[in-house]
Each structure stands twice: as C-alpha cells, then as structure tokens.
Amino acid sequence: MTMPFADSNHDALWLPFTANRQFRDSPRMLVSAKGMYYRDDKGREVLDGCAGLWCVNAGHSQPRIVEAVQKTVATLDFAPAFQMGHPLAFEAADRVARLAPNPLNHVFFCNSGSEAGDTALKIAIAYHRLRGEGTRTRLIGRERAYHGVGFGGISVGGISGNRKLYGSLLTGVDHLPHTLDLRRNAFSRGLPEHGAELADDLERIVALHDASNIAAVIVEPLAGSTGVLPAPKGYLKRLREICTKHGIVLIFDEVITGFGRLGASFAAEKYGVVPDIMTVAKGITNGTIPMGANIVSDEIFEAFMQGPREAIDLPHGYTYSAHPIACAAAIATLDTYAEEHLFERAAALTPYFEEAAHSLKGAPHVVDIRNEGLVAGIELAPRQSKTTRAYEVFERAFNEGLLLRYTGDILAISPPLIIEKNEIDRIFETIGRILKSID
Ligand code: PMP
Image 1 (cartoon, rainbow, N blue to C red):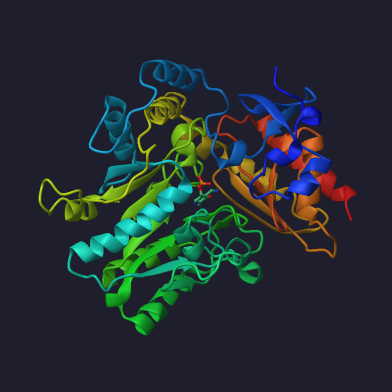
Image 2 (cartoon, rainbow, N blue to C red):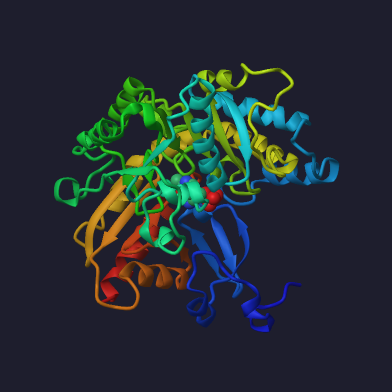
C-alpha cells in the first residue's frame, strides 16, 4: 500500500512547474489509470482531457504496451548504447524512420523532448562545421515557443518566465515573431487564414546576420504549451523555402504534434512540409517510458558518416539513449497506433471535436478558441486576481473529475485519440458550466 498524502513528508518532493506551497493546500493525487480515465486518491474517476501531458495518445495502460514493458524489463533491463547495440533499438529506430516522411530516415534516441531539442541544435551546428561552414552557429527560435528546459531549449524558446531566472543563456540566438493574432484570426477553425507572411521575418534576420552565420531555425508546427497556436496557412511552407534558399537547417519540434495528435503521423506529413530534423518524444512511447528522438535527414546523417570509420561521428549521447524498455514500449506503441487506426480516428473525430470546442464561443470570458486535430485552446479574458480564470477552471474541473491543462489565461484540451464523442461533449460542457460560475 502506498503512503497516503497526509502521512508523507510533503517537503521531500519538489514538483516541477508547480506552485508547490499552493499545491500542498489542495493536492491533486492520481493513483491509477486505464483507457480514458485516471483514478484519484479519493477513488474518483477523472476523465483525461489532455492525454496526461499531451503524451498518452493511445489511452492509458494499453495491454500491448504493458506486456512489452514487462517482458523487456525481465529479459534486458538495461544495455549501454555507446559502441553497443541491441535488437530492440534497431527495430524501434527502423519503425520510427518508416513512419517519418522522406528523407528523414535516421533516428538518434534520447529520453525527453528537452534532450531532443538540445540534441537537434547540436547536430545542426556540428553538421555545418563538418561541411566547412563553421561560422554557421546562430540559432533562430520563436516567441512563445516551448522546446523544453535544457539551456538550448530555453534559449531558442520564447517564454520569458522559463528564461528570466537563468542568466545569459546561449548567445547568438534570435527569435521570429509568434503567430498568434487575435485581431485577424480570432475563433479560427483549423489553421488560421492570416499570418503566413510572419515567416518572412526570417529574411530580416538573414539580412542582419548573413546566412553564413546562421545554423538552424526551430519551430513547433503547432505551439502547444504556450496556448495552442497552430501555424497560419502557408507559414511552414514559406519557412521551408527561406531555409532552403539560405542553407539553414529547419527543425520541427514535433514533441506534441507527432504520433497522431493532428490526425496524421506528423505535422510534417499533414502539411506536406518536411524539415531537416524532427524532434519527437511523448507519444513515441505513449508516455509509458521516457523517450525522445531526433529524426534526421539523409543529407545530415551522411555528413557525419564521412570522417574516419574509427572516429566517433557524433560526440553526444545519454546513458539511457535507446533504453531497451523504452524501445520495447515504442515498438508496442507504434503497433497499437497502427492496429487501432488511431491517427485516422483522430482525423475522423476532428470535425466533431472542433464543433464541440467552438460551441463555447459566446460563453462568459472566452476571447478566442483555436483548434487543429485533437487539440484545442480556449483563451479567457485576463482578470485582476492572484490566479487566472484558466487556473480556476482547471482546478474546479479536476474536482468534478476532468483533467485539463492551463497556461496563463489559456485552457488546453488534447485528449487521448481513443476518446468517444460523449466524452468530448462532457469536456466542453463541463468547461462551459464552470465558466458560467466564475467571476
Ligand atoms: N517540445 C515541445 C513542443 C513540448 O511540448 C515539450 C513538452 N511539453 C518539450 C519539447 C519538452 O519535452 P520534455 O518535457 O519531455 O523534456
């Protein structure tokens, strides 16, 4: 039996991205999970409106994944990945590479989205250097971007709250403008109509620094953590064209958008715009075991394979890169997605989900609703108070048995792809009802 919250030393655990003292006053404790539901420590069912943390795309405790993990932990609990391999690692890489669009055919494993982000930036800079373009070191991120919490990730990321405590960060970083434009695009359904021209800001940065100094651009095809910001129509294509024109590596952070969230394997596939490197995590193992990866183009990979055969081609890696249990979980996860046609299911459910989300237009405090695939953001008007309205909705919803996410004034909904229509209704009805009852 686990120790109940009341009996633990609460200060022993320091929760990430949490108001720890506030949390201890009204803790939310999850003790089990199955399918679309968590169960909390009071025995209540909690509908999972955000796939855990945008990661449990196939629903909780999928038998195939559980079995793969159990089997692997009993047969190959750990294997070093430096100068060593194991069959599950090769199989998992092959499966991920097959799912990714061409020419993204090479997979470098790590353990999280943050590690994947920092790895991608290092690969991009090293790639240019190997090709004799060592002056290409500048990195371009975007305002309101989230690429995890490594120093690379927060440097190219665009969230001041995640940056301001941590000193000077990486030097040589610029940011594109974010793409949220409530004046022109409020209550968009799917990709916003206006804003493709915001990609042209990259030309301004190139003019300022010269392409010979720029290594890479990193963007999320849909910024999730900062409040669900889908890229405007044509924006990613324009970014791709400018990067190609100037020899800049384009990195898509598909940590949220990968593995079915948008109703396709990846945003790159859905929009027909292929980056040079894709970072993934979360849905790669259905959240069961930590894993991240970089999926890298033939051209970049080949550049690293040109040196002496006995030289280490990429001096980078993690103790737990290609962890056998994570690899087993990834293979079982991809099997589950395919056999249950979950990406197609997400695509088919999207119109219903969109309709349900937009039914909240006109509800109290709602200033915008944004959606794409099975993800929606509901932006609420700011208020003068210690907590935002979105936090209050999040807290009340949990007490009513619904798990949501909030960031500032924005609620985010991103359920497992196995969700049923009546559960979609319940999510938005609950939010609508709570909105009517708050100041
Ligand atoms: N990139 C994106 C787009 C993310 O949404 C996240 C996590 N929410 C990360 C990177 C970081 O992933 P992790 O928390 O696994 O390090």
